[in-house]
Amino acid sequence: MAGTILEPGQIEAAASKPPFLNLPPRELFILRAERLDKLAVDHPLGDYLRLLADVCRAQQQVLDNPPTLPALDAHRTRECLTHGLPPLAADTLVREDAWLTMLDAWLDAFGTPDNPAVAAALEQLRDADAGQRKAWAVALISGQYDSLPAALVPFLGAALQVAWTHQALSLDSTAVREREDQTHCPCCGALPMAGVIRHRGQLNGLRYLVCSLCSSEWHYVRLKCSHCRSTKKLDYLHFEGSPHGVKAEVCPSCHGYLKQLYLELAADAETLSADLATLDLDMLLAEQGFQRMAPNLLLAPGGEG
Image 1 (spheres, rainbow, N blue to C red):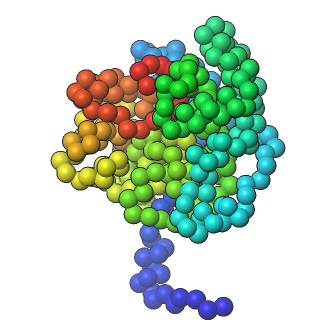
Image 2 (image 1 turned 90 degrees about the vertical axis):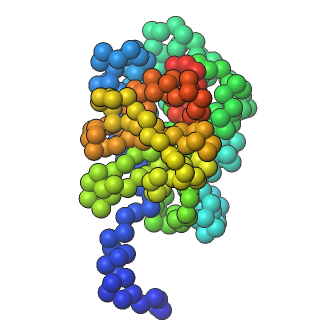
Image 3 (image 1 turned 120 degrees about the vertical axis):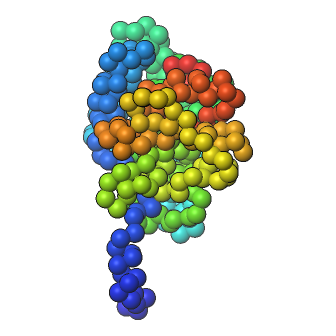
């Protein structure tokens, strides 16, 4: 079979080039749960972080033992990969039925906690028909938080996350085409939740954006706004002495910001839990007129869910 012949220098470069895409680890949700439990100790939002730790444990239970789902459309997946489009496009697949099975599985795994407000929100999700569930999910993924009850956000978001993470783990990461200035997830098209600055091996010093939906990570150059792509006068704000390793990359061009997790400052940190543990930084930036551009699907803007 004919192919391109690589010179020795090209072979070495190809072998040493860091991956564009990292799929989420299979133990993702239990890692998040364990981290949330640790962060909850003496934290002002400790009860909420512990609740979300339980949410993540139910996510892991479903990811480890998923219900039977229809296979992805192989032709559609192949065409998306060929043309550089997200094969798990959330804005399309969320209108289909497959993920609803994952929602029911997550609701069964989570059960009914003692908290009356949480129990009421879960009951509302259980009682809703397929059309209503899809409408809420479309609103959540598109950032239209006013179109769904705030109390449903972390639970609906959890189900969506586990559904799309399950599908992402079935992808061949090497088949996903790299594009310059990829501001949305190349797997599902969702916005990034935050960035993470790696600190070991060939990834040392590289920034990866972390998908808010399927938790895949893709390489995005540093010192560039991941919203408007500006490189002018970006600032990095944080609380002195914070143990979470989080700084906000603030862009004066679009007045937005994206949190960055520096693993060299907190080696055992995890992006979603670090984001939730640093909501005081979001409050400070909001007071200064900056807008959060990144969704966290376990958090309703303006509140704890």
